[in-house]
Image 1 (cartoon, helix red, strand yellow):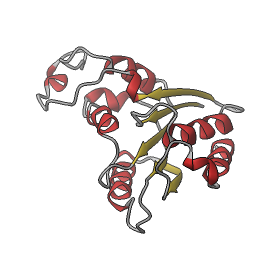
Image 2 (cartoon, one colour; image 1 turned 45 degrees about the vertical axis):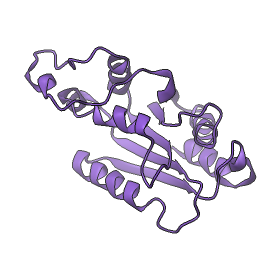
Image 3 (cartoon, rainbow, N blue to C red; image 1 turned 90 degrees about the horizontal axis):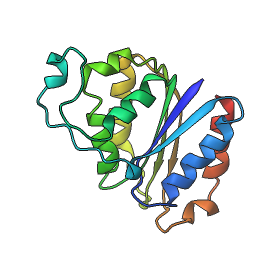
Image 4 (cartoon, rainbow, N blue to C red; image 1 turned 45 degrees about the horizontal axis):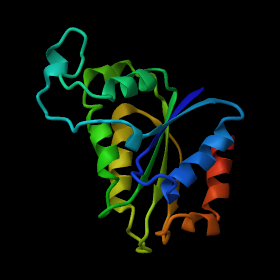
Length: 177
């Protein structure tokens, strides 16, 4: 399989990135893994103009790095979404990328499987609830297979995740795909 990991952390070497890299290490023994760190791409938010639905090539009117991401997603069989949790949602950088998938090009993607990796500093039991609702809605709408979720609470400073069991869980999840 071709697996694309969308890492939504704006912080290089942060807990989300470390977690996503652990998943990638586990999955790369059997699959091709393309790691996209959103901080390395200039992606504007969707402006809701819907011109992509009217253009013959379905291209977005905005000229930024999103076309590169579309090209990578078009080759993917599986998508892994990894994000820190900010105010009970995914990072704004990752949200901008996901919103730009409101484009008819998404109908040509062959993605059938998804996984979710979330990292939050808080320890509240409901920390991930709003993201999980959106995740389930997308799975249902696009008829995707949920291959697993790793939800890590209580990690704030860079490297805190290394003192949890989450990296082993992420590696195992990646290897089990």
